[in-house]
Image 1 (cartoon, helix red, strand yellow):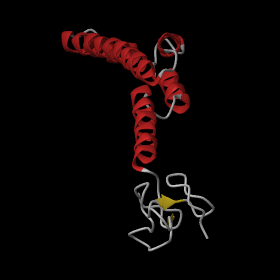
Image 2 (cartoon, one colour):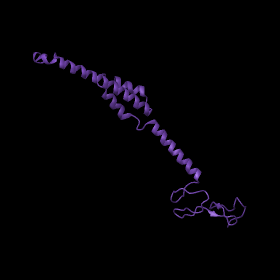
Image 3 (cartoon, helix red, strand yellow):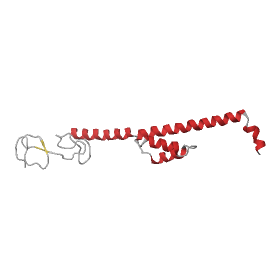
Image 4 (cartoon, helix red, strand yellow):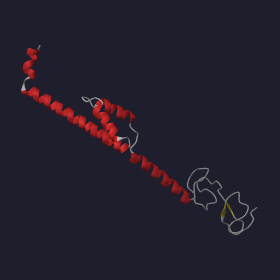
Length: 149
């Protein structure tokens, strides 16, 4: 069998193809390690550890270490998590500055609204003397000191 394959194995074309394949595997291995390190760094998941796992898990095949990383990596990037948290905080601040939301329909309302303009639910009552918006359970107006009925 060796005599049959010897002309093929010793041919310059086969040697070139073998060397190019080995070069491709080496470049692919390095690229997989680099991609894993960069992705783990963006996700906040110990980039050096995962790069070493991919590098040394199976020296001839980078895929088993990479597949382990793909299974256990964090689901989102650190920047995306921070952006989501900032958006939530910004919306909370916006709700606090605008006066809140209607308890019935959850639409934004101003602090001096007596009724919700969307669902017509009564939010506050007017003072019988000065007409300013008062909470429903207040018995005296803090603006004009008038007792409420």
